[in-house]
Amino acid sequence: MTTSVQRQAHFDHLRILLTFLVVLHHAAITYGGSGGWYWRELPNASVVPLIMLNAIDQSFFMGFFFLLSGYFMVASLERKTTASFLIDRFVRLGIPLLVYFFLLSPLTIALAYDSPANIAEKYWLMIKEQQFGPGPLWFAEALLIFAVVYLLIHKLIDVIRWSPARLPGFIPLLLVALGFGMISFIVRLKIPVGNEVLWLQLGFFPCYIFLFFAGCAAHKHQLLDKVSGKYVMPWVVISLVAISTLPFALAHLFGAGAFEGGWNANAIYYAFWDPLTGWGIILGLLWFFRHFLSVPTSLSQWVARRVYGVFIFHAPILVAFSVALGSFAISPYIKFIIVSALTFVSGLLLTSLFLRIPGARKIL
Image 1 (cartoon, rainbow, N blue to C red):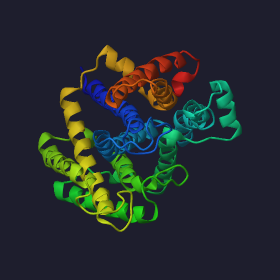
Image 2 (tube, rainbow, N blue to C red; image 1 turned 180 degrees about the horizontal axis):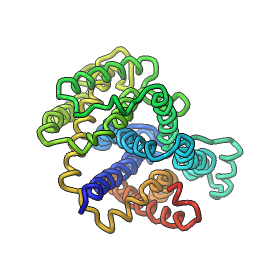
Image 3 (cartoon, rainbow, N blue to C red; image 1 turned 120 degrees about the vertical axis):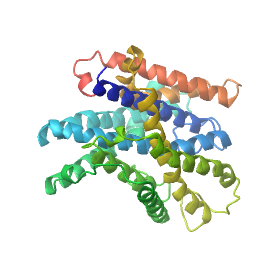
Image 4 (cartoon, rainbow, N blue to C red; image 1 turned 90 degrees about the horizontal axis):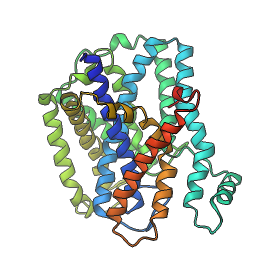
């Protein structure tokens, strides 16, 4: 088996995991986790294990997506002209964004809307009320912006030439993590987590921006494939220590104040906790998947080909299943597991149907 095939399987398996975590994340919010979502079974519920799952997920999973997106975007740019690259970005990102914005967003809101009217009537009402938005496809919006910015920078200077030949050492990377923790804290003073500007939660974006452009810089020398166990271990320890402090923080043992932002101990804690937790998880997963999950299987290849569709379609599917289970008096943990599994599998099957449409493979 060639190295390139192994590398592709390694990243395919990571994409599967990260997409499943997106589904888990939104299902967790539905049943008592933290964050905003279309429908919550008990709007004021606060389930600590699910809150912890959301916090740990948030620390790394979207940042990891940005890292991988930057890594593979540079490879795409090298193979294409500027015009064909921009067209490809619009097809792969812009079309799903527009479809979600104008069609799936009102559908998802209609599914969550508490009304005796049938779904078609509610859907039309949401369209008339212009209940439009990118939902989870804010990620595609951000990637389009990042791609254009990278392309402009690339036109001005030879970015590839200045790409590092080796991974940064522990101390430099630690200083970068602390620096972006400070930048996040400052940004959140003005734009707390949960507040949006053009549908983007800018409170998380300092680390997202860094990870995207770090992925771009890592491409030339394939640095994501050079993460060793020795390199990863200190970061895994830091992540575990940071995670171990989370229950104490949630119990407000570090003081009062909103975690989302402001001049308080909790906001400071959360701003630094994010990169110190997330970067160790990202590095640990890169090492683990490259060493232990680098062999493709027919199932993993089939799933990997469809996970982008799951990402696009999962919101209305998840809301439909969770609303349908709302009247059943069973544990929220069981519902969380059932809804997550049903949503992921249904998203794979729905994407399979869409892939039969002529031209859909260029998008999905």
